[in-house]
Image 1 (cartoon, helix red, strand yellow):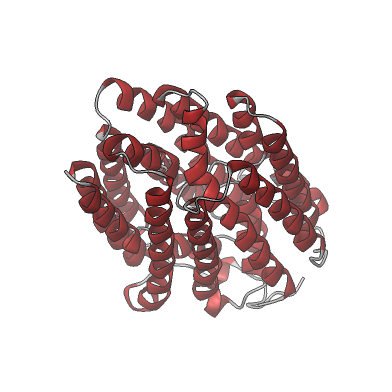
Image 2 (cartoon, helix red, strand yellow):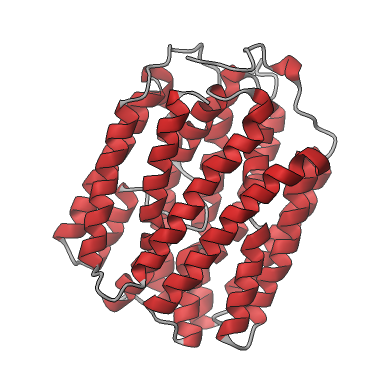
Length: 395
């Protein structure tokens, strides 16, 4: 693993630490400023739409100026976002700040950073170690997010102090990306090129990932945190520790993925673990007590993220090197865009139907995704012939 990948790991850790506390803090913070469940759902939709737009927009700068410049610019928006959080207590201005800073936070991460970073890591890692390295990449994110979530539970920590940490985190990211080596400009290739070998497959995968994210939008961390707060009266201290456990177990699931994938295969690992985790999600919605709901949620996250490194490795290995930016951008932007539809609906359903109904809808959509994904890619194998680049690339 080369220098660029190591710096990406540093930036990922700092960024997701901030996402960890913002994902718990923001729904409660906005509720205290007067937001209703419908307002909160609409706010989450806006942040996801902004993230989808950034994911699509970052392709141009990345292709023209390289990953380093694109990531430095994106991190600069994080600094701007944190400054706005510190200067204003108006709820909709806070939402605007979240949109600028890509604070479309869930248990995992989608968006412009992931789109560029997973390509950088792939090019800086030997092929035979890619699933393992992507597991560590995501593990660092979940562990850092878990620590961030636990920070919310400290009674002496105020929202303004946490927004200040967010500002410092943005500055650290700018510095880390600025230290990356410059990569040479690559021949452009995208899904718009008719001769792209994997064009049809990538489009099918993007559509399926969008279905998964449509379901995921009903169970974003912010909405689940609100559900625990409204359903059981859980305060920030309790929420902080619940989501600390969620992030840590999500990280452990990544290690399990790295162990199991060589035996079961990428496809079987991502589908089977994801399917079982969604059954646990149904248990969360139906649980009568706080401790039972928390137990089901923790059990879910011990399995739910095993598909993340396997999904990323699968995608990066079934396309040519010159297609990777386009494939990453298309799948991530489609995921985020589809996910943006759900929170507004979830907010209305929480307010007008039942608090737990969005969890059941989300679980159902994700189970349909698992079945369709397996049917679509069960016979597709990562093909070395699609990638003429060396196994280990040092740009």
